[in-house]
Amino acid sequence: MEDTITRLKRLVSNSNEVLEFRLIRDLDDLNSKEAVFKPEMTYQVFGDREIIFGYRDLKVQLFYSAGCLETYLGMTYTEKVNKQCDEVEPDEVLTKLAEKLAPDVHYSLTNFINALAKDDTFVPYGELIHSFSIDDKGATRQFVVYKADMSYKGFREYHQRIQTFLLWYIDAALFIDLDDDQWQYFNLFEKYTTPTGVSRYATVGFVTVYRYYAYPQHIRPRIAQFLILPLFRRMSLGTHLLQAVYREYIGRSEVKDITVESPSDVFQRLRNFVDSLNCSKLPSFQPERLKEGFSNEMIAEARDKLRINKKQARIVYEILRLRATNVSNPEEYRAYRIDVKKRLNIPFKRKQNEELKIERALKNADKKPYTNGNNGLPTDEQRKEILEKEYRLLEEEYKAIVKRIEYAPEL
Image 1 (cartoon, rainbow, N blue to C red):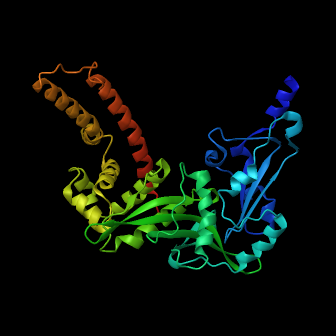
Image 2: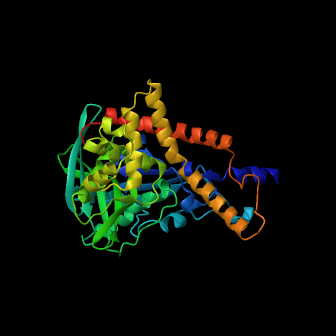
Image 3: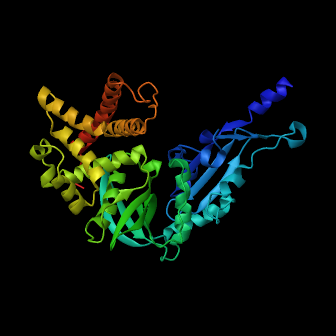
């Protein structure tokens, strides 16, 4: 019995470790270790424990052609659980994955290899809205951003393929309704040339934006999904892509502001950096004005020139004011800390006021006030400690953005 249990334990795999992706530009990428990248999460397919049962030395392969994302799904293993002997069944790995993928998946590697030729004639769908180049370790690389919607023939199938990456990199990812024509899509590609001189495009990432109606005749574009594939991160490509999206909407009179749906911490950092970089060029966000405090002029200028809402404008103000603050000057630095802490303390003060209103209402009704220590609120001393911790974490975030602004190229 013990030997059987030990053997079955060897047939349990961590789905994050055994799943591998490849973006195939040529046949060499089928075997190159440099072409492999891993998921950040797999629970949305394989469950909260992120395990696969029933196979030894398991490898699950999900390969995409770099351009049009023709997809191959396969798996290898050296041993599989025996249902008759072990009285347990292995997980249906390919079935679970296929349910999440676009319908035209290749299960034959030979057929997938033949389909790679489609990348020779693949051209991004939609309208070219931005192109740029970056220096990557001495080599110049070209990138383009295309805006598209479902009216472009073939784009629906392409998006069904690229959206599957959300499952592995965006927490609680949901596929959007492709039949809703209020969605707009922004896709980022690398434009490169093969050794034989063929011009090609490789998928890098994408953004989806929903155009919400705003009374009386405005729209509020909301960024819903934003993804740069792992092989292309830490190259400032996310900054270029977000700026391209911004430029598409900022100049339109019908756009009230640009918002973001439930941003992750990583995306919020990118957003804070880009918004701060853009606002740093506005008159009301210049150093001497920043030291006077957050103003209605800043709110109006951020909204009118960059379509940034009030809440985000306040965050940008705090980042840029830290940049303009001489932290070696005790009075100047103290004034900055107090200003930020006042904003951080607003939710606590609001809750405190609500508790006092309840107590007064009970007192006026001649009812005994309910008490739970300090009504569940921290003491003044505890609140000061909490506030100081919140501030320190926030300042570290801000310092990283300020440092990045100092070295940011003109975008």
